[in-house]
Amino acid sequence: MTTQDATAPKEKGLARTAQALARGTEKWFPDAYIFALVGVLVVAVAAFANGSSPQNVVDAFGNGFWDLTAFTLQMAMVVLTGYVVATSPPVAKLITRLAQIPKSPSTAVSFVALLSCSVSFLNWGLSLVFAGLLARAIARRTDLRVDYRALGAAAFMGLGAVWALGMSSSAAQLQATAASLPPALLQITGVLDFGTTIFTWQSLVMLVVIVVLTVIIAHLSAPKGAAIKTADEMDIDLDDTIDEPAPRSRPGEWLEYSRLLPIFAGAMTLGWLVSQLLTKPVLSVVSSLNGYLLVFLMLGLVLHGTPRRFLDSVAKAVPATAGILVQFPLYAAMAAILTKAAGRGGVTISEHLATFFTNIGGGGAFAVVIAVYTVILGLFVPSGGGKWLVEAPYVMQSATDVQMNLGWTVQIYNVAEALPNLINPFFMLPLLAVLGLRARDLIGFTFLQFIFHFPVVLLLVWLLGMTFEFVPPVV
Image (cartoon, rainbow, N blue to C red; front, side):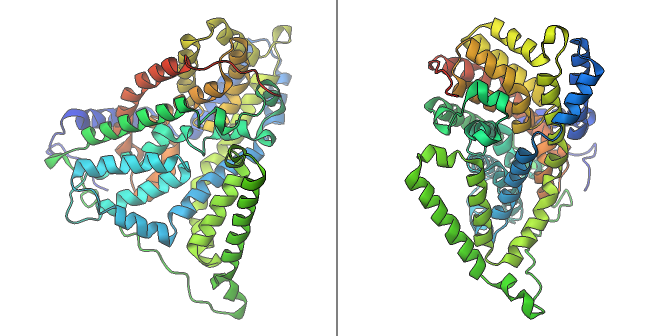
């Protein structure tokens, strides 16, 4: 990969600002796992300062370390299923056709941003891979000279801007799934289905506003003319040829190359889904995290056609789940220290924080403070689900105390939780692997999006929050 030299043309406008931001963020931001370890350290020190004994702190750390085991697997499966679906032959053909639509470099960048945000409403893992492959397909066009860095940043916008307002939102999925909620949190909030969170008209309005803002910024910040750096100029290999599985070599492999079992599994899944929709409320069905993952996993199997091709895709997807697998236990440990390591007077840090947020009062001030706090914490805990388990006990208790609508509180968290992704490169990793780029190539453009998104998000949670009424939790 080549680097930009002193004689390279100077970029202008928002594109120039984006590259200036990239130089600073790449220099000072460590690996996301370091943030998680630092988070544990900070929480432990805070517990000691609160009067907790060393034994209480280490017991909470060790006993809580595996509290999110089931949810960790579920979040890893979100990434895996998204990757498997996005790399299937039918989706690959769709991507090739979509890549021919844009007619100008700026339009190509904004087009990728729009599709990335749209797909992320269904599955953020699918969005990362789908949009990354779309960016590569556009970059392969010989009739259109597009900046590859801006295309890559646009491909990240689904996760960086609106993913948590969609159906794979970790917090919304958790709150809708009683079995995934820690008992202490379930006692505070009860179950909140999608009808009280992502499918409220206020949340959908917020979603549309942010998508429009994202697309406009992507369009205006795309480098033009001599400032464009193409994938070829950056020595990026854009060959996306999918290797066909090796021919069957022994009789025992014939089922691996047969479409019979995928069709059967797909039919079973479809039958289960129809049965669920006929016997349960629609929102409770679509809110089920396990059901959601079942459908996407079997869809990937069917779209790949044969078990052999499906398994090859799964093998390529597994490395993208590594960060989730090693970081979520640290988030669980943090949550346990916050909620279980009692200090002076038997009061935990979580209870102190709940009192602090309750004292802020209800209305717009509560919404804005919660949003800002979520953004700050997100820099250290770059995980929607893991961070929700850290925040939720005291945030939702405070929301109940000040009579803030609980479903909207989840959405305040969701829209604010996405913002740190525009700065912290943790969830860029699967996309960077697809693109063949480094974080510094994208962060300048995504940091620019953060600068515009932050005040807009605060305004939206304040104004739209005024339209809600408090509904007591049903436990």
